[in-house]
Amino acid sequence: MATPVVPLVVMPLIEKKRKLTPGVALEDDEEITHLVHKLEEALSDIKYYPFSSATDVAMKKAGIVRTPHSSPLEHYKLTDPVTFAKHAARYRVMCAESAFLSADNFYAVYDAIVRHVSLNTEAGSRMLIDAFLLRVAAMVDNGHLLVFPEYVVPMIELCGPGDKFHVGGKLDYLLVLLLEEEKDSAAPLLKEPTTLEPDSTGFAIVEAKLPAYPTLSDALPQALLEVAAFAKKYKKQLMNGVITNGHRWMFFSFTPGADSVGGTFCRPLPLEASSPEERAVITGILKDMIDGAWTVVKLPIAPPAQGIAVPTQ
Image (cartoon, rainbow, N blue to C red; front, top):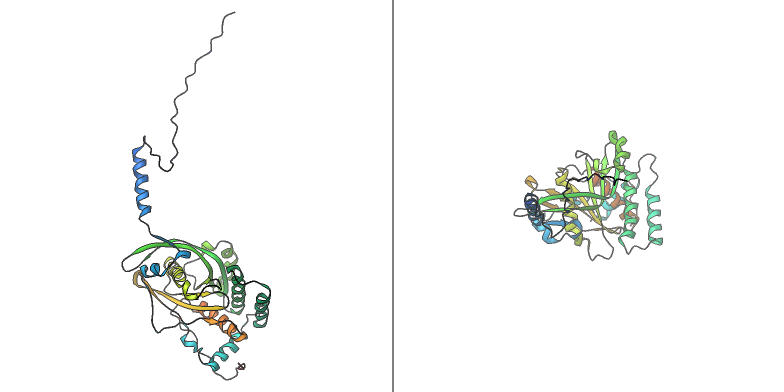
């Protein structure tokens, strides 16, 4: 029986592509190797500061300086006890139609958190902050307040007078005020916050800090780089911000410099949330800041005394 002839099939040689791994050159493709080296050089030249690691040095490099003898709260005249009491009385009665979190309900929630929750961590502090922000949402009667926890700001370049670098990271809270006619877009925005329109009108950023921090001022570099980055990304002429641990609240305003180079900020001393009246004033200022965030801050002066019951101190 004859031996069957098996045809010889010659397969074409397939060149195996090498994977690009650190330290391995592509000897057979000099052009790709050259491009990779160029990319490595470009990346190595980028200065990058995550928000969470910001320092005074980064703030100075960004050209952000404090405006002396200026405070976003000066129009409130809070150092006068009578005026302070009038503010507290005015804010306590604010509640949008059908809103469930009245001032009294808010105080009850606040007291319950203090009694039952350990506040020695940032997570504990955030429970107090959440209660404040929900109360502010209930006070808004001409629009709709959205709260975005851990809002991501992609890497963006900040420019100082003689330096430039990139920043990026998460904002603890971004507050956005929708106009009355924009309420229908609230649900989609909460699901996809990256679709936020640059021309939305009300913004503020809240930075949460541990109660163990020596001072809220320690968080200023981080908070200022956050508002500066957000202001540049969304082309804002003014950004308001807050640094808080739930007990103490520091309000500040940031104005970008010409051509988005540098900027100025002003801030007062922190307010304490140690009494119902003080908590009422803090929620009221938060509401006013989000209402007036689009223009230069001109916060309201205390209303006339007529018809206002002044609580006793």
